[in-house]
Length: 77
Length: 524
Image (tube, rainbow over all chains, first blue to last red):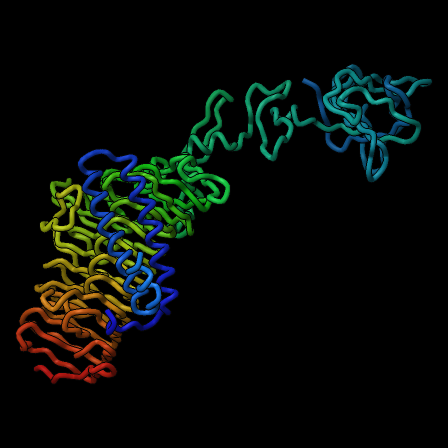
């Protein structure tokens, strides 16, 4: 992670975008889990949770690169 | 029927509410008794002799001839309207003007103007309306039509409003509101409680191809509580003086509307199937938010009336798709000679944009009956970012996808993945940044993963995360491709191949720099 190149947007901008993505995907996931109890709905929910996990991972990666103190706190937590 | 005459005007000085004496013609006009006979009923208008008369009265009266001692007179029998709440006016002293003129009711019954809408009926002598304009209710029940023949007041005849030129921003004057869509304000209304405009938008889309019109929107936010799905058979619309399938623009051009999805099924927001050769579909001018599955899915159908459906000369434009659960835009089957422009696709659960051969169906197409090979499609002026896979994926053997002026940022796969066997693709003037290409064992190791005959011109590659890093990665032997004036920064080599060889690949004026980037060699 540490050697991953980051060009273009600032880290703060990227994290903000990830947070917005996360909120929207969680909103969609919540709706699917609530309203679609079919097998299709369950598969869709798994798919959305996977996507959410990836975004969360990206958010963590971003912090790992730019906010060492946050990493320490997360390790403690 | 009461009479009226041309240029008949006299003065009077009578007061009160009784009959008035006619005191002689106004200069340049004619007296009543020269036009009418004593005892005739006539239409009249009496008003103050003033530029701004405050007293007026009109209706039906009776003319009585005078004598040597008495002037001609007019009785005021029926008052149709007046400055005294439509009752007899008690005229004050002073000169008044009396004119022979028909009232509106005499001309067929045009009633009062109310709320800006002219309503019909009401005239005492009017058995039928001679004029009837569409009101709001008419328009909602007959969208896109106008009254062409007025009946007897019991029924109207409608015909489509002619569309000249067509296309663009709902030039037809029809909006999705005319089909029942209701805009809402997300600042004051919970989207989940807003009217579901999905069925209305679907009805508008169906109406558009059946009536050759492009339909717009009047509001900003619309809740889509159910998927919008239609199968177009453009060869079934009424032909008249034009042949079936005539190329006339149709579709939705929503002028910046926001489609706020609240359904929860694995269905595209827009699912449009071609059941015939569909030409000049326009779809755009909107953003999609919260789609649980695909954003837009266009698919050509097999077994269609014309031995296989197809989209040709289509235009997807000015569309923003953010945070959808699967592919942002998926074109499947015989989709050709069309253009996708000014798209913003972000945070998709699969690829951002997919062009797929009809028989493959590898991407979860709900219908599974697409056919044909896409070709000659243009993708330009777009931003495709943060997808869960490739930014653009061309599934073999689609051909001739031309991409230009596209920003690819932080896609989980390659910015562009063109599978082997896709001849004639062109990528020019694109910026590809931070593509996450997985581990070294991944088959996607570059911003661009190319197949055969792909031309890459004037592109810039910045940073590839993970894997062996390369601007362009060639997974297998590649035929007849060229790479001109490209720059890779922090991407490792500008070119990498799976087996270290390329086949008839020319690189001209390319450069790798910064972060160990280097140009490996010309491969010819």
